[in-house]
Length: 320
Image (cartoon, rainbow, N blue to C red; front, side):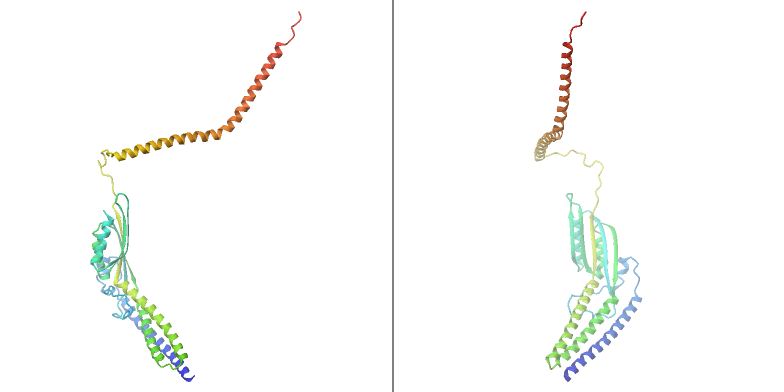
């Protein structure tokens, strides 16, 4: 029991010491990041000349996404994620898309996503999400601008310096805590002590994996700028004199159109007969009733006239 109490007391002291260390590291990193941010240049929109080429710290060399060493790069450098949006009108969006992908690959980048569609005339639309090393963003944008007419161009930057170094400080403190817990685990003499230390160690390692994954993602996003490229076809306009010649039909077109004409004529005839039948079905019964009433009235009138005439013919002769 005495050893268990000592182990528990050691855990509490380790947690307190690591908490103080984490707070100290976070305060130092935030202070340094804040001083760097005060020295940052404001973004004025001219990304081709200012935001990329003049800010080398914002675009470090691409680093592989591994689980070791992230967050331990050059301290207190600016961390900026660049995203460019470019819309271009080209004669052939499909060909322009291929050229854009080749240009991106030549600069050490890759295609994260692409899409294209075309209509019957060969026109259409294409888009791509390109990833290129941040220091080569200006070069890629210049090459893409040569694919056609630039309709719109926008660059967005996301400053993550404060968040980046805050997570880096938390990661450093968590690793220090992991080392102390491993030392305590080696000094455990009972199963209860080992379970207690391992439980705390599992929680710390989960935090380390979370922090490390976020650092790795940010490192990749900072190292590789993103270009959202949209390619649309040139709108064709009618040219004077174009299309004045009569198109020559082929034999297959003539046969197909004659067949369609016969079928349409036969269908029109059947539809006409059907329409007549529908009209008769709707008016036949009311017409029969009306005709019967009119015929009955005519017969009654004729019968009454005949009786009247017969009555007039049987009148007695007048006496003289």
